[in-house]
Length: 140
Image (cartoon, rainbow, N blue to C red; front, side):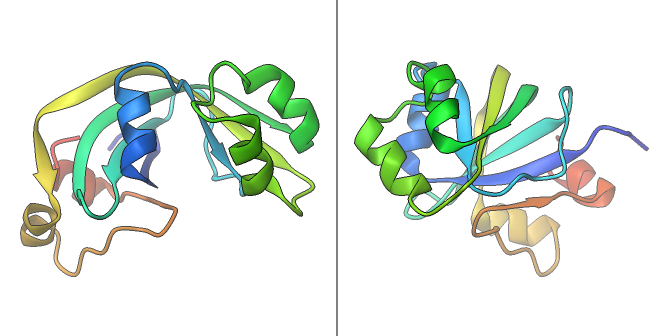
């Protein structure tokens, strides 16, 4: 059994595309998942795509006040300052998950396929951790 955590991360299609084309190298979150450098991410693209499209590695994690984190991620977050401010409005903390080693799946896994190999599978709103049996069923 692997000690590396696998975070199943749901991302909107526009942001997933930016991760895949390299213009977004930091994923922003209001809540800190239990992750550390070296852990893996399974990138799930939310509706209307509904596919697992890539795996990535976590390079680093930064937690700051939103105004401080922007100074670090402005060129890496794949969104405008206005979008950033809207996302973190009312939040006292901002999480930046720095990504590396993006590996697109040759054939994305559809939601129907994931449900066929993992009984009762539901994609997360934001994120969840994959169990070892789920990881093996999805070949991650």
